[in-house]
Image 1 (cartoon, rainbow, N blue to C red):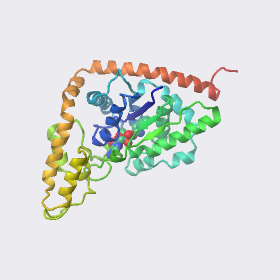
Image 2 (cartoon, rainbow, N blue to C red):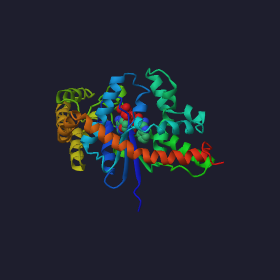
Image 3 (cartoon, rainbow, N blue to C red):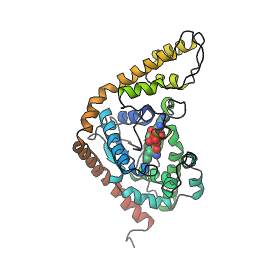
Length: 325
Ligand code: ADP
Ligand code: TRP
């Protein structure tokens, strides 16, 4: 049976963090074993909010190193940088002509970004169409993402159906894959963990900085002798690293007197270090072997291009841009 194609991307708009890891990265890496995995660094997307050239190129490279260090295998999968396959911008243009303004106007991520003070530009507004193009260009069946991307996936499906109705069945309509337990990892302030909220625990920061950040996780002033609230960022973050027995144990400690938040923070810090330490040496190696990493990304782009060109030639004909008179 043909393997299902699983595709997702991540913006290199800052250091990758626990939300990215549990919401998307670790699941992608697991998918590569049994599926046809397509994974890319969405630098065109990051351009909508990242005006600093050096920051963008450094973060693009480091995001690639993070993925590779965590186990993404560029031989088993197709792993590339978005802008190395520029066909996606051509597809964005084609899709723009069927994306209704009403659908675009309802996109919440644009409104959220404007509300946070990011200046409005057309790229930011049409971001969901570029994301639809990423997905549809590669005939993706499944798209693993966090909950924040749910609306973008709905828009993608809507656009794909419109194209298929108008021009014949040329596109695969993808399914989102959102994992219930990791769909919304909280940041240290209890809001969604996000690079743009300054509330992240980066997976590969220095030990000192990770410790300092964990110690800043927001807690309340419940006295030691009273039970504690489990619907809080510290409990939720720690839970990500625990199995069922560990969860039961932590819940018991929260429900009974004696728990000190400082102890729990220290335990969480140890869990984070323990979980990611095995990957640190590989990451350091990759960071200092830039040409090797770039070669792997170029190889991925070559593989991705084959699919992209095929889809584009079908679509060009389908919409009337070919010479099929
Ligand atoms: P950020 O919000 O930090 O910029 P991205 O938008 O680049 O992160 O997200 C990359 C992937 O990680 C997406 O699939 C997104 O849904 C997922 N993700 C980001 N933050 C979280 C979170 N706090 N919880 C779960 N998944 C997340
Ligand atoms: N918009 C996604 C995010 O901010 C990143 C992304 C770009 C993406 N293109 C994609 C995710 C295609 C899945 C599929 O997280």
